[in-house]
Image (cartoon, rainbow, N blue to C red; front, side, top):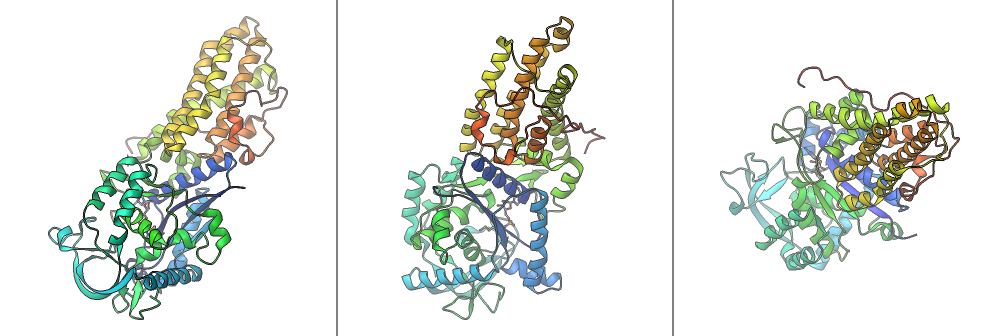
Length: 515
Ligand code: MSP
């Protein structure tokens, strides 16, 4: 067995409960894991929570709790939401976990002994919400360049990490590995940033100012900067440094997923930390876009964020997952509105996919008493549909190479549309009047086999709906165990098998007024 496919999401701050933005990264990662599994790859999916730092300390204080007790409560909320979203992660890492803490201290010690960390005087401007320091040159009007909130001027002794020592090596790595930072234009952003001299990174905070953090092993007056602690989760969650066997199976990570707002820590600090530790770099860092409303990023700090659970309760999990991945190209921003969600559900899922399944199974019941018919007389139209369906595999692989989920789903929808048109062209109601039952048999067999392929193809995105389709088609096996190869194979649905027509997969939703 080769290397396990290792995929990560950011570890989320616990000062808010999960909203649509967090759920987006989770659904994408979950889809990739299922996609890899269908291709026979072992896959490991790491997610978790980022629990140190001032933001969390402040939120805990507001709630009248100790940070760790506060964290315990929120973590349960995160886990409950991921369960509702059917997120099949393998390990949930918490940065307050003893193994992680020990490993972070191990790393600090190692880099200190190596001479990559040094003590120095810090004076600069600090943004508490972003937990970021800025230099005079980087700021305007005393506002944080990232979030535009006021900065605080601070002077203190801290430990610094010599980023500049690895700057050229990182630049070369980015230039010679086109898949390292994706989408490609993000790599150019990082390279532009790396064109200027890289300031050393302040990796500690004085315990007198912030006590909620990992104790620095060689300096009792300091705790670890939350980003330095958090980034290490990707290796500590994979066993580093104590479980060598696990680490060897997982590392390097195949994909680190995140949104564009945390590109810099992931594409500058993180690779340099790995270089300093002599650890191979991840294969791909993919920054997706933001869900926005009224042109602004959806977030806790900007009003009531969109709640995934509310939407799932109203429209169903599969529809929600489908919408997230189909609506915008992964990498671009997406404007969220409930109306857009409903329109997408009605057009793609109710009218196209749901309707295709429903009308095909209704005809199998009506003309063949609910048994898959045998295709004896096959014509040009049948063969055209078959050819289209068999080509699907190639389009799916191409789309997923770039994590282009919308193209992936578009490819599936294009087969569904062909199948719907094929029914119109074949006009089974006329064939029936003409007594051409054998032509209807071929048509329904072809439709059933195409629907079988479609179920496998949509499984990574909509596991629930796909399993439902599988059941209705009378496929007795467990769809979760079916391999993607079967999409490209024709004739795997067996004539004579009884179907189990159920309720419509995606009922149409009425749009009441403008939502
Ligand atoms: N704790 C850091 C990450 C440390 S990783 C070593 C952090 N946490 S966060 O809670 O702010 O989560 C940021 C991530 O949440 C984004 O990278 C993205 O995955 C997701 N999103 C949060 N809001 C989002 C949108 N509005 N749109 C899309 N994704 C968003 O940063």
